[in-house]
Length: 429
Ligand code: ADP
Image 1 (cartoon, protein in one colour):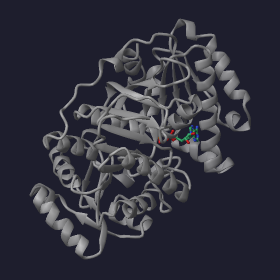
Image 2: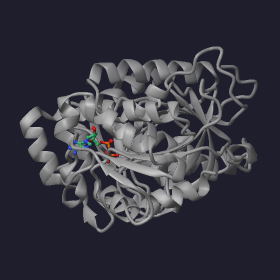
Image 3: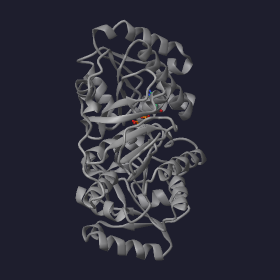
Image 4: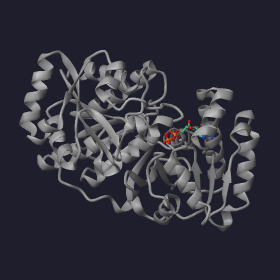
């Protein structure tokens, strides 16, 4: 990939839907942005942009692998001029005691030479706020939110200073909301104080967008930050305010019509997605996969494809593997958590591949890991960000894809309103 213009912001996202969410936020914040799938190949032609979001699928893999992939993404971004790199994590801090937020942060911090790193998953517009280091999802602490039942990384502690300390080699500190409210210089002083005490990373409180602007302005003094799309918003606004970047309007090319059959896939078991599937039943044919059959072999995916092929001519269809937390727990106890997740993700990728072979050019996918498996299988190297479907979910136009023009929407499980699937298809023409 060649970039004639200087890259102001480089981002490494630990999953694909999180990357789209961030790319969407940066675009709305005034930065022209491209999302790539993995580290771009040298011959990939991409438009000139202010920011590149490299999407990895490193949230739930072995920590050592997440570290090495993140480091090669960082090397590529720095090599293309990125002065600041944001390691983008989930706004619900999805991780386990084995990682991968802590190990990746430690490695990138060592590479960047920063004494202390600002860390915040806060993203107030989607209800993620941090107070006294505790992450709230809407009105409840993280450990009381639906994230306590996540199939891959159930979150049982809302205190992120504790959570990150269990994953990182460095001492973790806190910058409270009172310091943030006093503005960038107060935060800088507090960071210097913490750094002097040997703290290598600070969880930063934030409850409003103005807090993110303060955090963004301070983060630009550093080479690395860690957080969700909220800190991306802060960084984008700080870059535009600094006059380094002229706020750009999203490209019209990203929204041009593609046509062709449309389909939706749901592999997320989040409460939001379960509701969205139920709502979709009123407007399109819905096939619910039998998860035991998916684990038993390839036949269930073939059956789903045959079902879809017979209906695509009449309008969009939805294929879902999603089940309730009780059913997920029962299935995992029968087959093991990783085996279940992997088998269902691969079945979704098989189905997506078959759908595209059958002419589908507009595809909506619900679930972070699920989207990762699908996009990998389709071999799409990157996306231009288009119109926003719901907070954090843009329409994506494939760039450099072998199958030609294609529109996708990749939704993190918890995102979107009840009518998400039809909302998405209305904008994906
Ligand atoms: P989210 O964005 O909600 O976290 P993901 O796709 O990232 O969604 O994660 C959901 C995980 O649950 C995936 O690994 C997926 O394969 C798995 N999964 C999907 N359906 C089921 C099911 N019925 N039972 C158990 N696990 C499932």
